[in-house]
Length: 255
Image (tube, rainbow, N blue to C red):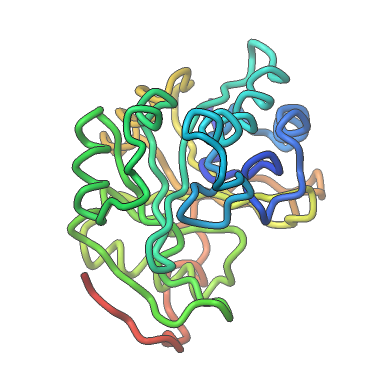
């Protein structure tokens, strides 16, 4: 039996671009075949809806409220884990293995460099995955690649077109990175979705980190998730997700 986990998910409580309350996710994601999810709301350096004028503790409390609401609504048979999506110059990282206490202990985190963040995350046993590395949007002026501070690459992001995912896949392959997959879900409207498949159940974020770093996870995707006849498949079964047909339109900057 394979266990599918969503690794990239946003709630309305903390992400300005999301429109789905945390409490609605467990039932919906279970209906699509997921065994669990990692809540990765946009942090304050990205598209966050948390007011900046609050005391640090209150900001963290609101930031974590989406995760708290998802957790409270989930049953014992559905795993809910905590993560973060952290933005620099459009290059965003999924942080796994960090905690609410880690955030409270680092009130200067918004001023961290990429290297400082990487070392701090690793200091508590966490990892940094470069999310959608070749994403192009109207608000982005360049693509920033950061192999020295990445533990893996998100090669499938359901919110991106196939050609951008394929560029990420080739980048990960060329650099020898472990590969991740996720939906980047913000609401019910996403028709294609993704995640990580494991041959065993994941119960804690520590187990997720360990399993990912051991190479036990497989990036998967599913087309037309609202069609019950479809299912999750490995990214390696779809040529369009592995072989580039389009070059980047934006300048690529290496760090």
